[in-house]
Amino acid sequence: MSAVLLNARLQLDELAHIPAFTVPSLGLPLITYLIFGLPDVHGDPRTAAGVFVGFGAFALLGIVMFQFGVGIAADRASAWERFVRTLPSSAAERFVARLLVALVFGALALIPVTCCAVLATPLHLDALTWVRVLVSLLAGAVPLGLLGIMLGYLLNERGALPITNLLYLPLSYLGGLFTARPDDLPALAQRVAPWLPTRQWGELLIGFGLGGQVPVHAVLALAGYGALFAALAVFGYRRDEQRQYR
Amino acid sequence: MNTVAGAGVPLRLDGVHKTLAGTPVLRDVGFTCPAGAITALLGPNGAGKTTSVAIATGLRRADTGTVEVFGRRLPSRAALRRLSLVPQEIGLPAAVTVWHLLHFVSAQRAESPFAPPVEELCERLGIGPLLRRRAGGLSGGQQRKVAVALGLLRAPGLLILDEATTSLDESSRATTWAMVREYVDRGGAALVTSHILADIESHADRLVALNAGEVVLERPLDEVRQRLGGSAVSVRLPAGHAHRAIARITAEIAAAVPSAVASDSVPAAMPDPAPAAMSGRRDREFVRVQWRTANPLPLVAAIARAAPCATDLLVRPIPLGELLDELAKGTTR
Image (cartoon, rainbow over all chains, first blue to last red; front, side, top):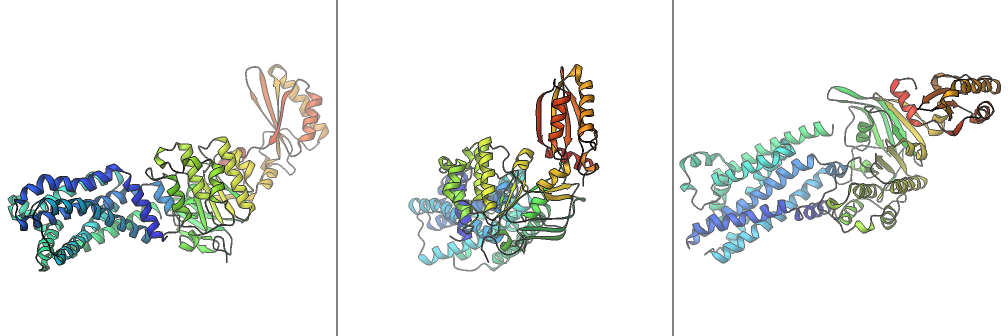
């Protein structure tokens, strides 16, 4: 078995047996969809699609922010991680393993929301639209995943969980992921929303995922956020290396 | 070239300097760990042992100097493939089974001619019944056994044990040391740190002593014992008669070994062979009096002749702890 798969399997086994991770990561998107998403659909297929992609993004956002943000911060402080660094697998292989695990949990978080949307709403998407939605979900998850990595390296273990929580729900709400009509958000939220990566992600999902038109400004904004978060993540990683391993 | 060992010295530090938080913690540190020997890294608190181990395992990088494992620079993957660590703290992932942890580590290492087979390892360390349990449910001692197993599992040519036997019971400690001995007898090299000096005295072949970030001694253990004066001989004397008994014993020693002088001086400051050194500790009714000597037999004979009231004769090698005390005081090099 390759080093990537070995590391991924260990991380999967570990996370799968931590209810504090699995229950909120897998259950929260479904619960919020049932409470806030479903009542918003009103039997309208377009609204059903908009609500579904928003809550799909919310599910993925939780995984990438907690798996990367809190996970990396915890690993940085862990004696086990120090031990693992003395094993032959490289830092890059361990990181790819973490990415794989995030994808697996992301898929697991999407499945219940998707099933619920398909079974309980008039959601009807053709195959191409499903592919575009999936691509948009993954593309938007990249800069938000980098945000998680950035938090993981900039925050310590104690600060990572509350701060990630503090960002996760506001980013979702203000970004319009909980509604098919972001323009109906309160005025203050609408003033803030355009500056948030989650709002750009939502526009990508609606524009390209459901509509087939690439919203260039959203793509550029997401790329910019990705570059910014990546730069800060690299800065945090180097600072951590300097402190811990130099 | 062997995939788990390879050409070159198992571990070589040369001219290593390290400064942490503005304080130099290692200064021109250099030592080697040869194959077929257990090398003990000793020193008082703050001497630089932990930093040396971190550098020797690639967890820290030297500011200057070279660190090589079988001729490969750390922290390259080629070097990491040739070393195995039992860390002081391991923090096993709580939700993962012991079996999975063993599999995770063994799958990353090649078969090793030095390490015992996994079944034997589990049986001797008594972790067979723990294999299906999750690490978080294990006691501290059980977790330590698993840590030892992870270090010894397919251990390549260099094994580093950092306070590995701490919190193990007597039996597991003995088993661990026995397996480390077998590992080096098969040609592996071991670097150990332990604050249980009795273990070091019993099992190490070579000592590397650090003090204030510098290597102050790198010698075989037997040579160090010789430098310390060989043995400590002590007896218990009734407090009321101790002064006269000591005077008689001293006179006997002077007659039997003319070069011997009873003194509190440390052995390193004495001519070789070291004459007897004397010190005493008083309790309520008795005084335990101790002499250091390179040759304990004439001393024992002198005590028998001069002080029939002496009881509890004890002859033992000079404790390593005394060497460390002297290192800390800067009196031995």
